[in-house]
Length: 376
Image 1: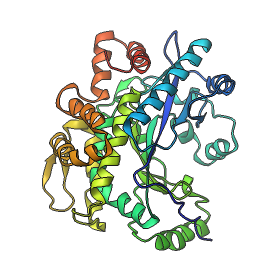
Image 2 (image 1 turned 45 degrees about the horizontal axis):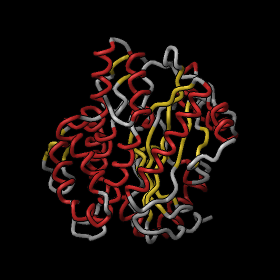
Image 3 (image 1 turned 30 degrees about the vertical axis):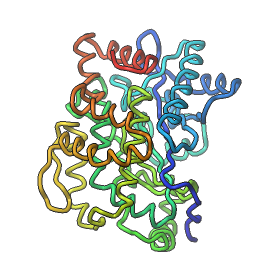
C-alpha cells in the first residue's frame, strides 16, 4: 500500500512546533500537569494548537501556517503569553530548553493516550527517557520531489541548526559537556537518523515506504524519528534536530533561517545532493551536539574542515538577498548576534548555573527568560 499523496502547499510557507517543559514553581522540577493545563486552555480560545506529548510533564504547541517572519513571531508571542497566564493560574511554570537538567526519567508518567501507551509498551524505559524537548519547523514544498530535494540538500546545514538551537547542556543533574545532550536520547530510537537517499516521491512512497510498511515496522511517517522527514499530509518537510530554545523569539529566527536557506537551495546553484554527502553526516552532527558553535565540521563535497561558527556566519551573508525577499532579515540578525557575541542558549544556561550555584536556579532563570522573551 503506497503512502498517502503529497498534499499541495504554498512553497516556503512555514509552521513551528515547540515542546515545552512544565515545572514546579517551588523546586523547579518537572511536574505532571499537562492534563490540568490542557483542560484550562480548552476553556479559552488558544491562539494556535496545543496538545499533550509523551509524558505528563510536557506539552506541544503549534503555530498556524505563515509566510512572514513578523506574523510568525507575533503568533508565537501571543501563544507564550496565553500559556504563561494559564500556568500562573495553576501555579505551573513553563520554559524551553532541550532537556530538564535534573529530572529523573523514572519519575515520569506516560500521558494516557493510545499512541503513547503503545510506544511505551514498544520502547520500554526509552519512552520515559524521551522527556526531552525539541523545536520542529515545517517548510511548505511545491511538490513532493521538491520536498525530497530540499530534505537532502539541507544535509550539510543540519549542524547549523543543532548548534544555533542547542539548549540542553545538563542531564540528570550533570553537565554533559554537550551543548545538545537531547539528541543523544533521540539517537537511541531504531528509526532515528537520516532518511534514505531517494529524490523521487514514487521511489520513496511506492518503493521504500511500502516495503517498510510490509515488514510491519512502520504504519505511518510518525514512526520515523529522522532528523528531517517528509510530511505528505501537510505538503512539507519537517526539520527535527533543534532543541527547544529558551525564547519564542529564537524559535522564530530559526524558522526563517530555514526558510531563507530553502529559498537559496531552490535556485540550484549549489552542487546537487548525493549519497556520499552522508559519509561525514554523523561526524558533523556529533561536532555540533558536542561543541555547539565551536564545533569543526567537514564539508561533504570537498572534505575541507570548517569552523562551524564561521560557516554559519558565511551562510548568513549568502542568504541575505533571500531574507530581504522574504522580509525576515530581523530574524537573521538575531542569529548573527548569537554567533558573533552572545553565544547559544547552552552557553547561557551554563552561565546561569555558575551564577546561581544550582541546577534549580538555572531552571528558574529559564522560566524567567521564557516569560520575558530575552536572556537577562
